Length: 454
Image (tube, rainbow, N blue to C red; front, side, top):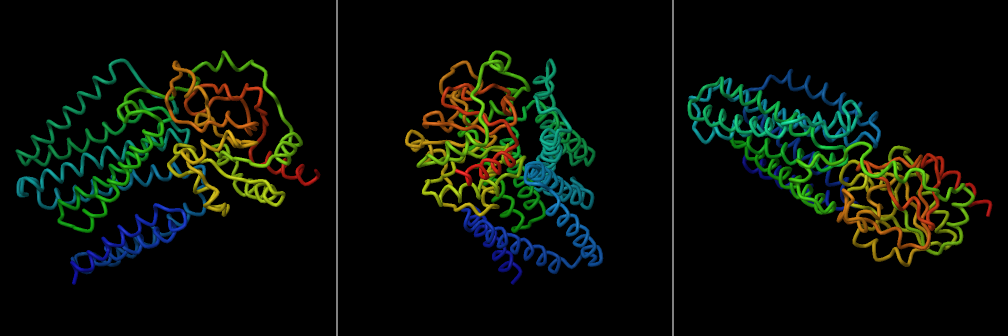
């Protein structure tokens, strides 16, 4: 019966993950997967019968209160940092499971294949833990978002990696517990050293990759303690995270090696100084309202500026007003818009934007030449024509939303500051572009009010 219940829990993981693939079913998928995890946890506690129930209840109470507090307090703009923290704690949990097994049984008395899985769980978990919190620090602004590099850094990282593998092999062969702790310590250092040279522009990819690592660490721990539920759950997380990582690197037309080792995303990079003084077409709320009122089709492109301003509800109201006037409205979502995968989709879903209005890159691009007005809300790099036209640009070759093919472009942005990639955007200086310098939420509300007076 226990094995059947474990199998049922595993099925809920798979069903939940499948439902998470679509916006209409994502919330239910989250509930199904959570229910499966609860089932697996209860089965384990009952079957093993080695747990102090007072400790379990206390842990559930403390964890529940902390989780509820974060759920209520953390803003959507900080969700990438939260995901990074979750990845880190997931990796740490897997490493701690391995540590308990080592302390209880010792490496010398464990079968070689089990020793290897324990060491793998420890290495991956330790790297995920420190790497995730370095990513958290970069996104939160605690650490500089630019790549932190020093002379000989790759040699140091290579030496650490070789040392890590060497000590792990020695520990597995000799059964020395001291080797296990050395492996754990080096893994923690490798996590830091691997992420600090990666720029803020690539943090979404790093978070996705570390998410995959946290799953692999869990799967390795599952092999070590012979937990099928942990193996299946970890494998699903690892595979899903890896697939998402590949999709994101493809969306940026870059390899994973380039993301990890190129040091891309320096602050203030590119030709900002050369273009910052060029004239732009400044717009007011009335200008924006007039352009939108006389359009037949409008494409809204959300970016991180929308998230910062929490402007999704104001945008929805503006879109509703336009639709009531007979304007066709759609939203163009770039795969790497925002600070984490699906960031823009989640924000718009929060405002109950109809799913059929959300277009991905492949769906939106063919429509831009037939679009009267594109309204860009805080997006930068994902609409930068340099990626298409300038072979010297750091983002050259990255698929973008070709918004400049529309009849009119309106950019709602606080300033001409560059995006995460650290390069300026020629779109801002195009004759067909209107720059509406304001907070996204306040600007959209003002434009909405002006629209009502026309």
